[in-house]
Length: 123
Image (spheres, helix red, strand yellow):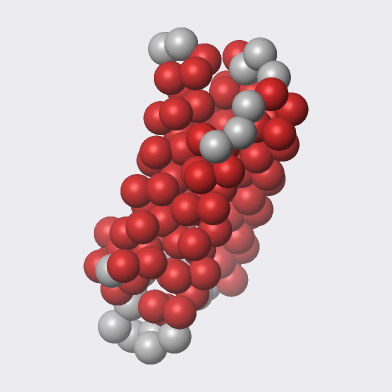
C-alpha cells in the first residue's frame, strides 16, 4: 500500500470508529465486547473516545508535512495508551477476557498502522 493510501485508510478508519462510538455508543461498546447496558455511564465515555478519534482522523487528513506527522504521532500515543488501558482493565478484573483482547488488540493494530504510516511518510 502506498504511504498516502495507508495514511488515508488509517484516518478514515479512525473517523468511522469515532462516528460509530459517538452516534451509537451502546452498539459500538457491544461490538468491542463491553457491557454497555450494565454501565449507564458508558455512552458518555464512548462519545469522549469517539470525538477524539474523529479529531485525529480529520487532523491527519487536513494537514501535510510536519503537521501531519504530529497528528500521526498523537494518534500512535493515543493508541498505545488505549492498549495499556486495555491491559490494565483486564488485569484489574473490570473487563472480561474477550473484551480485553478485543480492545487491546484493536489499539495495538491502530498503533502499528500509525507507526507504519510515520515510517513511510515523506513528512
